Image 1 (tube, rainbow, N blue to C red):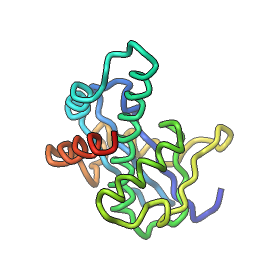
Image 2 (cartoon, helix red, strand yellow):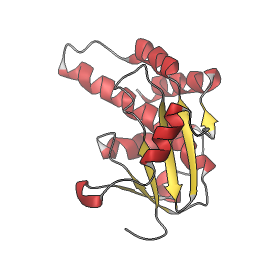
Image 3 (tube, rainbow, N blue to C red):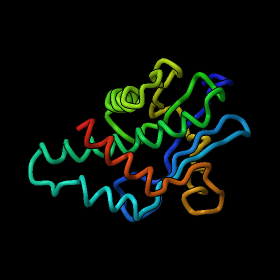
Length: 168
């Protein structure tokens, strides 16, 4: 891995469990930033958009909602860290990776901004790359030991709900 590469990692899977806070953190050397979504807001999104799995189409729909939520976190994290690093290595917590790039670009297009995939060189970690340097930061933010740079409030959740409706 290159020396000037920043790393991004998720504290808890968004859907496992829905009731726990989830944070996404980026770290490069000694500098770090993070965003956090509360468990009650995740439960609200679950009740509004997640279907009971009866068919393969329901499972696919639910996975797409999870990817959009992850991309919304990633979008806000990348906005506050503009200039930290051009090359970013993302932990492969949400899949498929092509859907992450596609939905991240969709969020940028809806907000009429330059695409994040043009501003940053986003790479996903492979299995043999070792532990992420940002994971312990994300865990500490989720547990409240370190304050998050952005904690999503009601207005963020309403914006996210609108984005999910537009993208789906």
